[in-house]
Length: 292
Ligand SMILES: O=C(O)CCC(=O)C(=O)O
Ligand SMILES: [Fe+2]
Image 1 (tube, protein in one colour):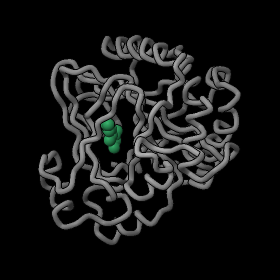
Image 2: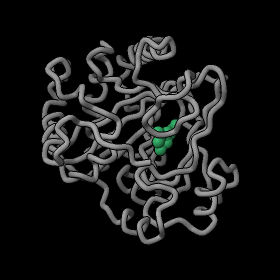
Image 3: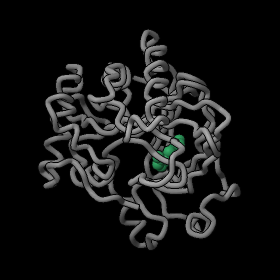
Image 4: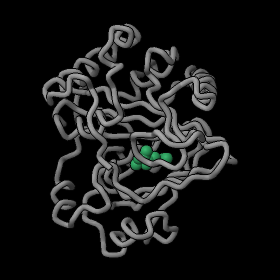
């Protein structure tokens, strides 16, 4: 059983707080390889040689405006030619953590997103306070209803360098917004005065798993190197709920032999599960419309 930095079982901690910090989910022999692969990928994205990237000025997909890069998309894409990303995404301890968090077993895991969050070069950039799968404008009734959807997936940030960019409101993942929170998310979404906010300080090598409906924001500092692996995995029970969240990123490249050839054995079943999910949801091209 895996425990967090306070020795609490990780599934208990995320349930209580909406996030949990865990040490050492990167095998030692992969650490430098991942840093090097990130440097090469970031370089390509900044040069415009990798078209799948997040651009300063836009928070949610699609990222069509701007030039300064704050995220690199699709780290397991076969054209990126960086097999260490899939090797880590399928590594035993990481899979064990996800299985414990989702109370599921290996054969029900679903392969999902794997992106990289980086420091922009030209200007600082703030993301707004948000929940990933519920719009700020959602009515109280809609918000309440969406929050009752069970946890079918988890997402995480794994820092390759010390990273203090993420802020969360602990324990905000299962309740509707207070009046103050609603007001901030709608009218002052980059506010520095969110009640009860907590800065998540990650040391290099630490991972924070967080519920995608916890209230969170991030502050991108162009002067401090950030290379934080940002990924998600789900379970087959998620069906169309997970489809909406992940397929908005455009994953048609997953439906190719070039991709399946690169996958370690440990990801064969999670891969089959995501293809089956998309097919069942009627989205065989693995691409759906943006949520926000
Ligand atoms: O930069 C981060 O740590 C969070 C990113 C985020 O909230 C998002 O991509 O939705
Ligand atoms: Fe987010």
